[in-house]
Length: 127
Image 1 (spheres, helix red, strand yellow):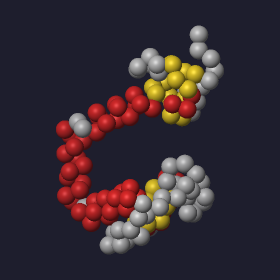
Image 2 (cartoon, helix red, strand yellow):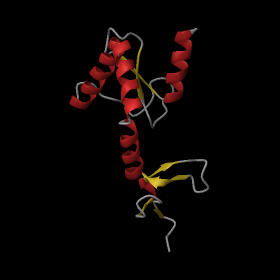
Image 3 (cartoon, one colour):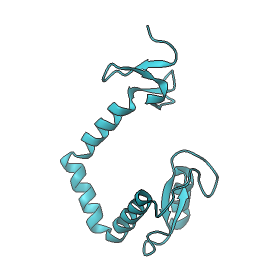
Image 4 (cartoon, helix red, strand yellow):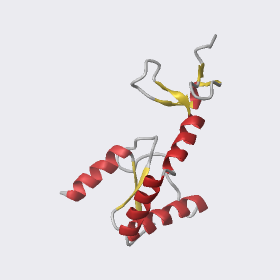
């Protein structure tokens, strides 16, 4: 019998702490039924499907400046040259934070935004 602080992953059948499951507010307990490790393995496998690889390659070919800017930010964060903050620079929200480029010719000049503010920024740029 499981205790309230543990949950069984339907994929690997492991009994794990609740912190090992992503949030899913559509589910009764508020957590996904697949553990983070199984979800990541699935996502990695899915990302390597031929049509997805081709779509990424086409996007990168069609948008070389964007691709290089994204790579530059990734490398700078990984090396410690650029620090990714814990909160959105617009609203202060914590959690998932995206790097937003206002100008792709300045690859390391990014604004760190939550998904909601990032979407709003793109809507504002489009109008």
